Length: 57
Image 1 (spheres, rainbow, N blue to C red):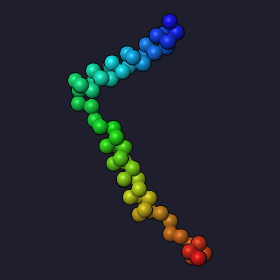
Image 2 (image 1 turned 60 degrees about the vertical axis):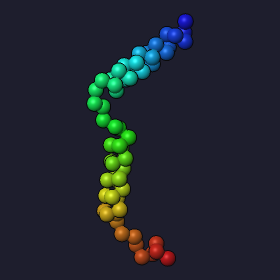
Image 3 (image 1 turned 90 degrees about the vertical axis):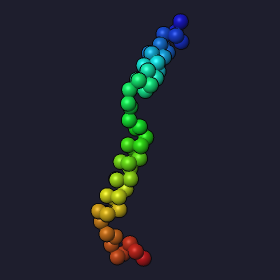
Image 4 (image 1 turned 120 degrees about the horizontal axis):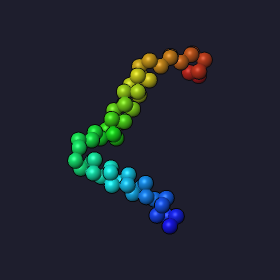
């Protein structure tokens, strides 16, 4: 009884997620995250403070 009770919300959420994904235009989250990471890397490379001369050696 405990296993069914504890996994009930997980099963309902999975069924609801499958329904929404099939019937609605859900954006691809992985693509959005990758785009954000590329933009963050670009900003970091362009606006990083220059290294001191002592650190070059």
